[in-house]
Image 1 (spheres, one colour):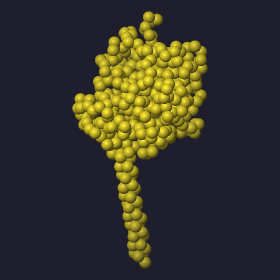
Image 2 (cartoon, rainbow, N blue to C red):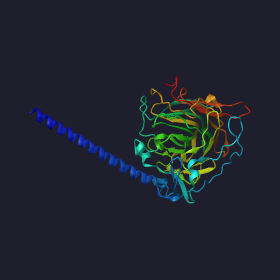
Image 3 (cartoon, one colour):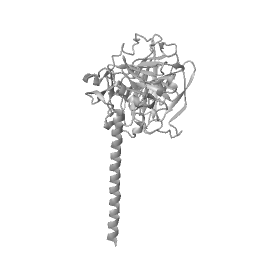
Image 4 (cartoon, rainbow, N blue to C red):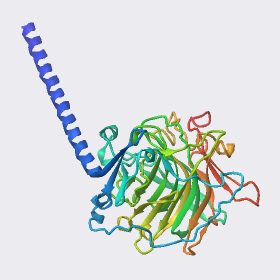
Length: 423
């Protein structure tokens, strides 16, 4: 009787286990099917493909067949080949002892291996392994499933305030999973921003973390952003890459980084979002920058993105809400994304900027030189009112350093993350 019971028990367990295996295999097949469907959606047919020495593949896609036009609001969109505005810009850079006299042209590794023909745009191909790394295809190019602050049960919170140097109080919106350090200006309707962003390759501790140096233009929870980032989950390595980003709701359900969702209309065949930037700054050695600028087209409501001398494309006004009119906040600085920030112990060791404190200054710390705004005066100028702010000053700090009254301030930012003060 006992032997018969044992046999039945083992047979039942075998059925359960085999059913579990079958279920896992079915789930895997379904997952691969979803991945392949997503790849087909993201990777449009290429007229030419370029294999880069860093492992990337750059597809030269017909400008009229790029991923942007999968967005419902862009189905009948007419492409703008160039901006409809011309804001007067400075022709000389201030040589203030804190920056190189001029940033070299933006260089990407893939450009050594070929170029895209006229009528196409350069788009980094998304590989299957890129999609298998992410937790959710639905949140591809965002921060993953929404995180919630344990204290407030919300993905973002207000409550921190900064005071600009004219006494204006500005409320800061902080997002769960993000720790930012930046120079901020507010109080006007901004229609442009730019700056020379020092390029580094900061340490990133976890596959789920990322670190960036960038410029934000904001209106409420909406923002358009651009700069460089190190994002191993999204790109599969720790190389420094060019990025652009948009969101309407604080990174939750709308927008994404680069072209991982429909929205950004690319016009450039020479520069690819997501491609590797070179060369990089070295501690105590040569320093390199990329010029980032974003400008609003009042006719269409679009925001144009330019990196170096190359206009990359634009976020169309038809996919935006408040930003279709203007931005009301501009920020320059760095951002670390991790599940181990703001009260989590241990804190992430993912670095921001160069990974050094801003007081190290030129050659040591990461900086943004010549931050500029454009308002309705249509002049490109240093913001009249600014304040530097860090959400976690013991982890990542700021320093708006001015050598003397004869020199313009240079904004330094960054830090190591986890240290004896940031645990």
